[in-house]
Image 1 (tube, helix red, strand yellow):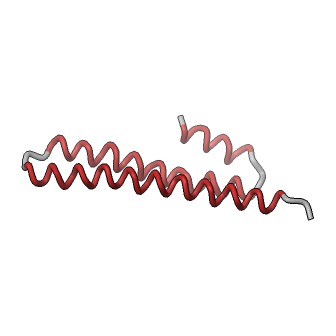
Image 2 (cartoon, rainbow, N blue to C red):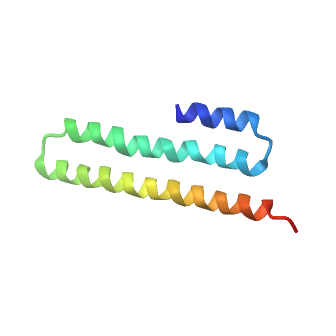
Image 3 (cartoon, rainbow, N blue to C red):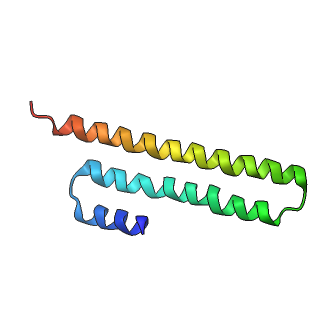
Length: 88
């Protein structure tokens, strides 16, 4: 659903800042899905206890890092929009 909203925003908005934002966000969301789903599936398939622990750390750490990148990307783009929209 999020990808659909980003596509609609990209196609309907003419503002270059909005278009740039909607081009970068899907990659970050895909990274979040990868770290949450694919690494979790590997964790389920793997039998070794030590490897399960490592995959759990990679999964949780990856999700936190990517979520932090999404927040940073959003705030950076928000500050760009505010800077360009100020009169004067």
